[in-house]
Amino acid sequence: MDNLSFKQHWEKIYETKNHQEVGWYQQKPMVSLSFFEELNVPLDTNIIDIGGGESYLVDNLAQMGYKHISVLDIATKAIEKAKARFKESGQNIHWIVSDVLEFSVSNKYNVWHDRAAFHFLLEEKDIQKYVEHAKNALKENGLLFVGTFSENGPGKCSGLPVRKYAIDELKQVFSPYFEPIKCFNIDHFTPSDNVQNYTFCTFRKKH
Ligand SMILES: C[S@@+](CC[C@H](N)C(=O)[O-])C[C@H]1O[C@@H](n2cnc3c(N)ncnc32)[C@H](O)[C@@H]1O
Image (cartoon, rainbow, N blue to C red; front, side, top):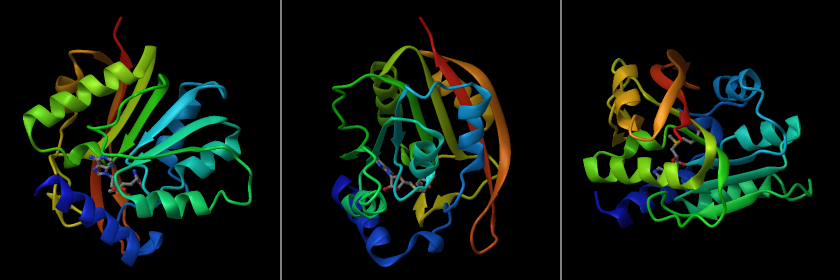
């Protein structure tokens, strides 16, 4: 699939489905939130959610008191929908419409969060580019939290093929620049009660 069709796919998803109709929907993304709690991520941390879509992670983080949150997604419609939720609140979220591989980093981050966006990269060169990009975007000791479908998870997400990762594979891909802190597998239950097994890893940027 070329880049334009890939973007169009996502625009259509967010134009035609509401958030409870998509498999990845979570009102409270507990796995991601527990990462912030377990590592005592400070409230003045600079966070970016890659492929955040309409995710409620940003709402939860803002409620917890995080002040510097950016959300990046390839789909303009996803960003518009998420942004609309913040219209009245006055909270200052930085919204970015971009392909993660094309995103030019002007600001360095302490935390790079990605749940179910990285796994759409299928070609080795794009995977390498993503890892380099995350390394360049993160400050010293920056934290990277990534979630993909596991080796036991589905082969497709949103109708598109994904690359599935076992824990060791995910560690291997990020190993040039990142050391693992914690990795685990967990089942996600979609709104229609299908089970999707995920691999999650937290990494720290190497010196
Ligand atoms: C399966 S959804 C997950 C959404 C959100 N992270 C969550 O967990 O609820 C994947 C999201 O990643 C976005 N995405 C996929 N590939 C991307 C890319 N190369 N650059 C930026 N966003 C991307 C899609 O538009 C979509 O919003």
